[in-house]
Length: 434
Image (tube, rainbow, N blue to C red; front, side, top):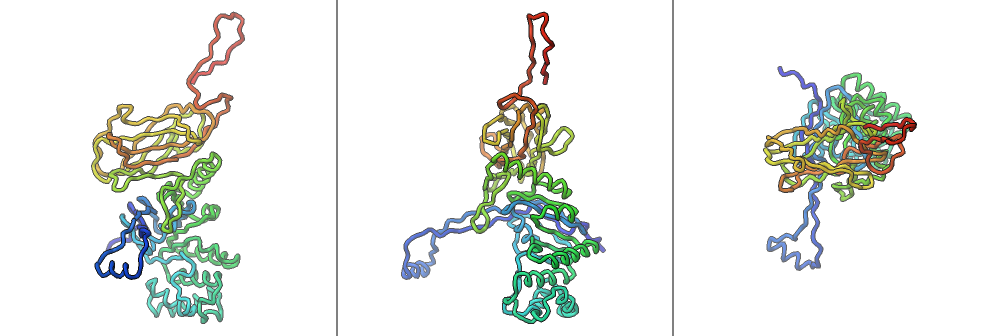
């Protein structure tokens, strides 16, 4: 017999796009529409592909609790709806190992005219339980929800708190192996919130897998085993909650303090903007896409604050969907106000990259001495062909600050030395050697 997978959830190269069609405005009458329909003609439409998730790779180990963070519109809820099967991916693969239960939209799946008891039965069947199993747990579910006599009233008469209590009671008593939660616990009062956290603690001790989206970073750090930061439809970092939350806070603070523009390369399904800390400009059908971009010191540790004399390494992760010839990368360093500090490329420096086979790789640019004065900076990076065609582009990448104790002014601090000649009794002159 095959051993159970050690991973509860595996997402590989998952892409989710929405198609938004707009009918061109024109004057019509009932007669003209009827004639058009009888002739089999359709009104012209303008279709726009709206990317929500851009190549997600994520693994949730069995028995672990993973918290997902990110700003509003970054793709967190879309990701959960893909995992639970509400959405299907545009491309990519999702693997689930275990019965899954979810708390997403408040009261989702409840019929407003049915009683709480009837909705328990309906939702239990939807979640994969038999009628006998549901009836055996009915009293336990009702007791946990604390609805009392309201359990036999139509749920349209329930308050939002009663909806939440019933939804949580059903989701956690159908014996799921994987529990998905999207910020739903914020609806409950203090008593039920404590009760819910106690129930989920029991889940953790029982070896269940939990994935939770939350804006409560303190709870995430205290309660989760792993954290994933999603931004602009991409996974920006996965790791320990403390490290991921620290990097997330630093990036947001830096963007706010520097006035860094919040680019909006994509739209949400309802047409609203999806602001990102990194703006991605991948061309449709591109053979190469940029993935994780990282800024590290010589020890390989990710950094957001540097000194003038520090060296850094910029890591460019890419994914080639097919073999590519004459691929190159360009990199621009900009001050937060948009001033170009430095720009280079593999083409400009005569760096010839070998013909790339399909698959993932990483290119590193090492800067031995940064040489910048105090300020806030970001990178722009692009994967392009020798002809100039841009395959993928990322703006506002890896924001960082430079801390300098000197009183120099300007953008850069070049390597220099002061020397005084011709005065025998001169006082010792401090030499600056970089």
